[in-house]
Length: 331
Image (cartoon, rainbow, N blue to C red; front, side, top):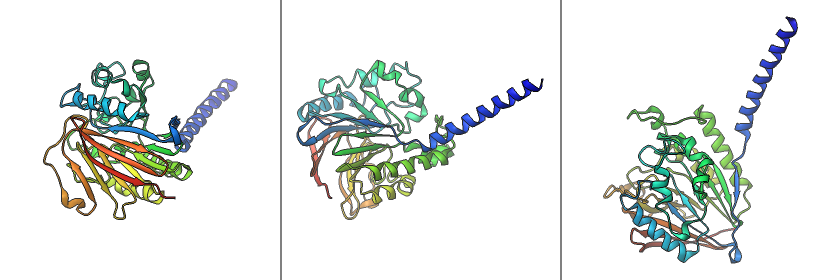
């Protein structure tokens, strides 16, 4: 009997130690990295950005997709970025949810868009199964799909850090509308937020790329319907400023817009016009001195990055370029 007691105790302690080690490993683990080396001259990179799109082709999603295909072909893009809210209204139910094919595979059919898509989760995605969107099983259905909570894409001259912003927002936990969110692998919330903040800072500090960009779903600076996301401003903006990030790209507000900080060293770019847009819901007074462009219609964005210069363009639902900006890299 003594032998059985000791064996049982050893097993329990082994399991406990394993759980502790897994917990420590999770909190110490750095963001996973994807190498996407450019094959263009000088290592230049071009990509499209679309957000807040998945509505089965409705609300002009199909028309935006068609024009993305045209611009993607013209620019010979390397990949596409989605800024989240990939499937309305409540994300995916599971990996076999037909909305995945209906709203993604069957919509973005142009040859130029048959390339990797790098994707973050939005708050509406959290209303369904986040595990489904994060599952490698979706890549067996459509091999373009690359969705993780937090990760890094390295091209050579450019590092893009993708972050999971939804767990930072207080109101989703206060739940005033009795919405249900899938918080699996996020709780305890404070530790998860700390994990993101620390590893975002670490990723940016370790980066030797000429350009550093951060992508998240929620706004930092916006004059649109949602406006600034105060929790993101408080917890993450100082990290971006300290590490001299050139661009923060987001969705969430269903519009296209460009703001900057006061000295113009960081650009805040919203591409959330992938389908349903919000008309006439504008708050100019929020950032009157730092707002350069706002369009409350459907569309998308392109980014072309060379060693010294980046060109950013916004397009409406007809593919017409409606705003352009050039920004320079600084040593």
